[in-house]
Length: 146
Image 1 (cartoon, rainbow, N blue to C red):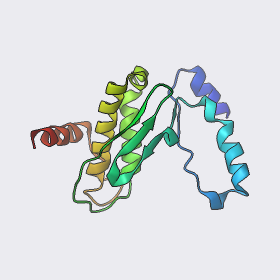
Image 2 (cartoon, rainbow, N blue to C red):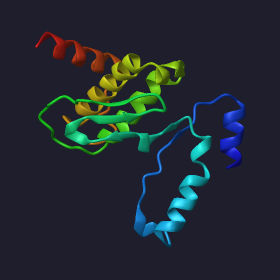
Image 3 (cartoon, rainbow, N blue to C red):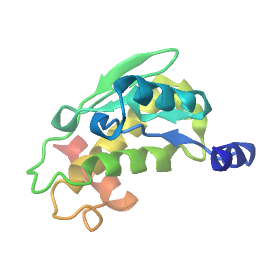
């Protein structure tokens, strides 16, 4: 909690991925209590950006909500696709959080994140499969051309 407070005071963007694993908690009530205890400190909560694998993602903000389709690829290994999605998303908004307030801009960022997740599934291994910005932009360009 201290690290969270220090980061927030320093102006950091705080992303929270609760990643609920019920067997690790004494009870569902305790899980909810602990997860909610830091809910209001986060700028982004992954539960409000729901990844749906091959079905894309859904987004929920205080002003709008919707979904963004993903890209169909020949998947080899899905390990790391969700992490790639979240990493790409955070990379795109860390310097300009106003993206979260404009739906069209957010949809564009989520399309980029979906592309990163899709690319990651086309190779083996979570880390080696992570795409660079250049690879993701090239992938998106090819999708438009098709």
